[in-house]
Length: 101
Image (tube, rainbow, N blue to C red; front, side, top):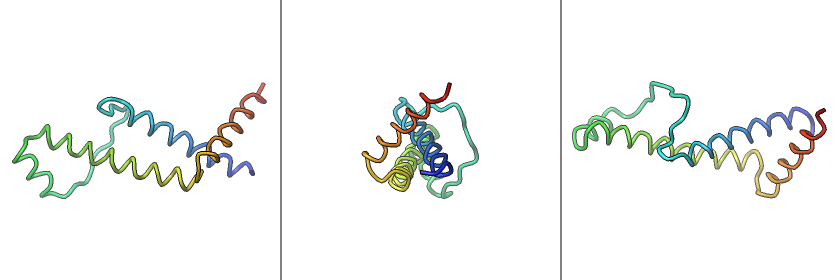
């Protein structure tokens, strides 16, 4: 594995780890918030009208978490392809970390 491939896989590993931690957190509280999020107007209007603003906020959060889960699964498949490949890469990272004085 060349250095560029290692760097890309390492970045993907960090992304996947942060997504995993985010999804594990109760309520998905993250340190960073990014706005605006674009949603269909009628979706938001009807949910607010029927269930209130808190429900609309929760719905947007659920949609985001679902999308993030699907996206991270694709990233995992593209970057590593299997649990074995992931474990082998993690071992490589550990070896490189031990080599650094």
